[in-house]
Amino acid sequence: MRPIAIVLILLLGCAPSAEREAADGETGLAIADDVVERLERFAPTELSADLSSLTEEDREVLRLLLEASRYMDEIFLRQVWVDNPKLRADLERSTAPNAEAARTYYEVNFGPWDRLDEMEPFIGDLVHPEGAGYYPTDVTREELEAWLEQYPEARDAISSLTTLVIRDGDGFAAVPYSEAFREWLDPAAAKLREAAAVTSNESLARFLESRAAAFASDDYYQSDIDWMDLDSPVEVTIGPYEVYEDRLFNYKSAFESFVTVTLPEQSAALERFKAELPWLERNLPIADEHKNFDRGTESPIRVVDLVFAAGDTKAGVQTLAFNLPNDERVRESKGSKKVLLNNVLRAKYDQVLTPIAARVMAPEDVERISFEAFSSGSLHHELSHGLGPGLITVDGRDTEVRRELRELYSTLEEAKADVMGVYNTLALAERGMIDQRIIETLEPTYLAGLFRSTRFGLHEAHGRGNVAQFNYLMEKGAVVVGEDGLFRNVPEKFPGAIGELLNVMLMLQATGDYDGTREFLDTYGKATPELIAAIDKLGDIPVDVRPIYTQVDELTG
Image 1 (cartoon, rainbow, N blue to C red):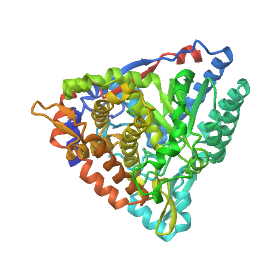
Image 2: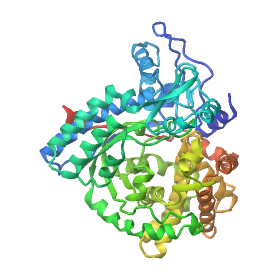
Image 3: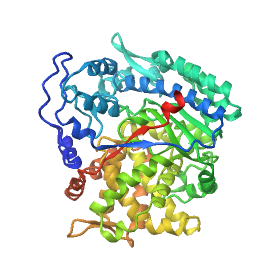
Image 4: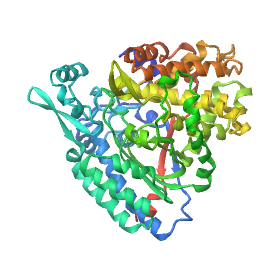
């Protein structure tokens, strides 16, 4: 077993068994004998939204959006692994003793690999392909890079966010998503157009029409612009967005969907932060030459309840907030939209964060965590994705941070957003814009959040990024562990250490320093004995929630 997997076994307190159940006689599937225990790391949680203010028209729109979103599950399943549909069918026929738990855990992970355990298989023994279903299963980064050196004219298509890469003779070719996934994109587009015809909300109709067109053209720019302008009681975020699943290059975007109901009062309460984005950019702890003063600042903020999620966002650990779109052209012209999933935030806080804090943090700090600080931290994390370097120049080339940092980009970007969120909250407090209750509870709530996300696994962008933050702050004395094994914040050192860490991360991005980013993550992104001992205490606490969308059947009939 690889060394990193051994670390994760200790981190998670639930090692993958060296033995498997006997292969099922009918299907030949071998299921890990601890699959029931693995599944128990996700707490089944009913999620519901307040639909009382919705009209009959809104409910019909919601029904159609739910039907469109289900196709994202089918597309993402194939993006994870091309043979997933066959395995799913085999699993449905399995009569092995743990087959039912394996089927559920397969749905949680969108495949046979455990997302909490370094993508080790819990069904069969196939090694997880780093390129997921986006590239030939046997391709290596070195092979594809060598071919692109010979054929540089193919680089844009091969590295596009919306193409699959296949072998073509002795070389490679790019297949647009619109062709590869037409079987599901066409009916999804039809449902979006049906919803556009039903709604009387002009901004929603405009977005649904343009997003339906994008499914056929692979050009998402206009529909991203329209999504930024969307203002409706019922909203949907649907399409290819995040690149986490592509661990080969971090190029390929995964299909997902969030069907939500807006909470207008909570949203309005946060709108004041939009006006502060230019000041927050100027206040970053890097030289002005590396700051992004031209990025758009419209940046709407929405607080919503999640009705249903599909695709990438539903795999493994659940999204609690997001900042989209990722297209730097849209960010330059309009900024990005920040969306907080209020009912998901509350579920994670109650079932995961507070039990973790009680187990590994000093009592005086446990008393100072709060949902307000947790929710505020999530907001400022998402705001921070829209700040700092995006479009950069490296060796005279105009490029993007994402392209230069490749597979390391997501890990550094998620960690940067965490740290910048704290840095900006402290800065806004000095301007009198943050409630004192949040400031009093910020540091311990942030520390509890590091323990929560560290349990996601070192392979996962949020998990490894949290380990790096934790170790850096420990090194600087901003976080300490006592003889009782419990962790404490050190208030007099914490703000300074956060500023120093943010500077390090931003400069790695501003210079597109791939080697420096790898060195930083290799140095700080490893579990220490202190962290392992703390995580080992959390084995009976859920790692995350497993949503049960209680209103879908009611809405779809």
